[in-house]
Length: 526
Image 1: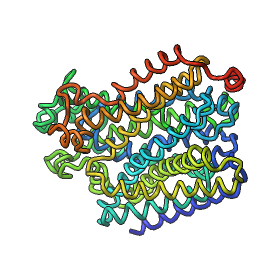
Image 2 (image 1 turned 180 degrees about the vertical axis):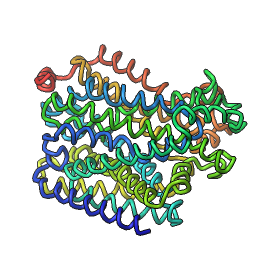
Image 3 (image 1 turned 90 degrees about the horizontal axis):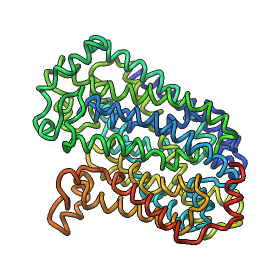
Image 4 (image 1 turned 60 degrees about the vertical axis):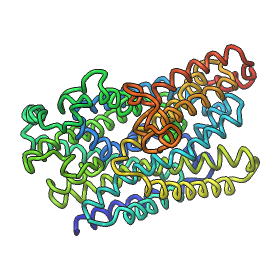
């Protein structure tokens, strides 16, 4: 307990101080929403990585990798290839330039001004406001499960307390406070995750021995997983099996592609002053992702070796089926108390860095993208900032309610859900807005609506994981899903995203283009 109190108080003191710096240096709407567009590349890289990699990656996907093995490592590959290189080079540079040209402060505002559409901005803001709390709840559930296991405190109590702590410093410091604290939190995450990886491989007998021992556990894979296509913890699932479709399309592609449409990440590009800063941010972010997700997924898989050697059972059985408890249980049982306390601080860092950006995006969506479009035009900085903070408070209550009603083993699932939904909804309009001058307002509307509703429909009536949980399909059709294998295992984004792209192109070719003055202004720095 001494270590926990010492580490936690030190961490919170530094976090409060950095948030105070953000508050002191916030004097305008641009400061509160975009940190004045003067962010250092190292700050950008670590902040982007810390926001991207939350407790969802460490607790949720770490637990999933304990169930499915090293197949999850492909998500790290996509995180670096798409979530960093494609996001920064293909999208980031033009996002920064167009955002500056259009004086956009949020991701929905960038789309709205590019297409001269208040509907596009308002609807995009509404999607964020309604669905991002599910992702925020998943992040909070991750750390709450760890504290529940470690301190034996009721989950609901931990969840509420940590939600309030995170919310306070976001409301106070704006995006500058979020960025400052994210850098500090990112450094903690790197150091502790590297130590976790080294210790885990050492405890499992070294790299070669650990992987060999993991392969030898193949006969002990639960029967229901074998029937679904599981071929061992060091192998990919059987091609075209239900498990293969789920791991590839939902766990890997759902997040690995959906990251492009993440509003809280895309807005980071608008905080930089030049392309040079974006280029310089790439290696810092890539290394961060590799040392966090790569280690988290490897450790998750290797828990099978350590649990079996100690308890002669796999971790999924030890935690009675709740995969969100695998990493917390592993840390609590096999590490000294000082490291457990330090790891808790790491999870606090991961959760607070992600939640702070989520709550900031939720608040700015409510004020800038919804209320300001309808009611707040011409209002003062103070009035807009107040509404933003009201939006953050609203998001806090939404996240609280959702987190308390979500089922077990939901962290990775809820994360993949939000990434997938954003990918199908936003990516086509975002991509063509940056690269195709002939993209029209009608096409943006049609693409966004098409991607959103097809994705949502597939979730509710075809993708068995969500359709079974929501129960609408069973209510109307007396079945958990309207289709069998493989359709019931294919992620909604895989179905909705191509259709959304096609709709955008077709509608653009037959509708009136955006005014030439707007296009010239949007592309004047490109």
